[in-house]
Length: 399
Image (tube, rainbow, N blue to C red; front, side, top):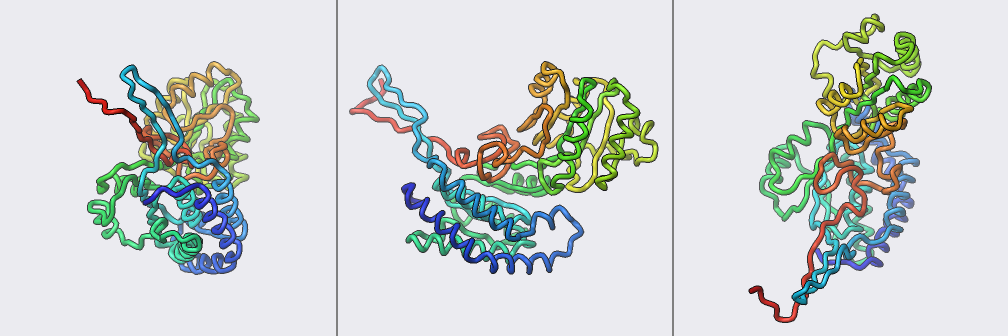
């Protein structure tokens, strides 16, 4: 695709925001068809599917936020003139064509496309069948915005492929692909990794851990745990596991207090054998595989550890490498935890629910990357470019 100037891109985004506002009733009506057809018992998936006036407002805000950001394309990273006279300039450049595969959330059809387009990338959107009607009308809105300014609809395209067709497309794309972002659970990620023939940037699952140190402020710990677990169970930044140091003062009493607080929020509690000696009425885990499970539900596993080192080992062994938190009043201990835990975001005395582009000051996000190349954490506008070297000479030859 050709390089577009910033003004044209921003004009398309301004028009798109106006179209969403104008057509909000039709968008919500299309979404209702998807909601009425939803037959799964997965409440997290259902929650992600909902589009209401508030969600449309958030879509418009996301577009406006990206429109106001500086164009990430063509920025000079470095500029050096070598001793031989060659001028070597490194600049940011678009990826080319990005494919994102995602489940449920129609707002991804907005956020992924606005980011890719502003960064001068073509984007192919493979949404889940449960959001079919919602995604179709949102694609229509994008196409109207593009054609209004004389641009091809090919910039933003919704793919309607079944699982077998998606597999075939990944193995032998009908058009060049430069990057694939699978945004979903472990099964989706493994499917894409198995069949893709180009670069894959993993937007990992959650399965986030929180460690309560013996040096924790208990009030802070409880507030953070409740928020991280109950604020939005469908979020990949929601909390799944809590590890509590057995040397915490009044350990038994505080475990009972936490249990009562979680029950007030209708959270199902599962415990390891050690915690089970205190919370004897709770279900004890029967399969260690649960440590690797992302719940996406009002469910929390509580385990006991002897030390910071044991907590770090458990987290690095089982977590989704998304987000992890420590509750402690000891800053040196917090820093040690944050340096050792292998996660995209690590927190001291704060909820994992902040692992979000908007909350972290990045703005709208394509996904939360748990990969280490080419970027880790929220994939915002500035992360949807690669780099390119421009080398200027005057008849130079290498000798």
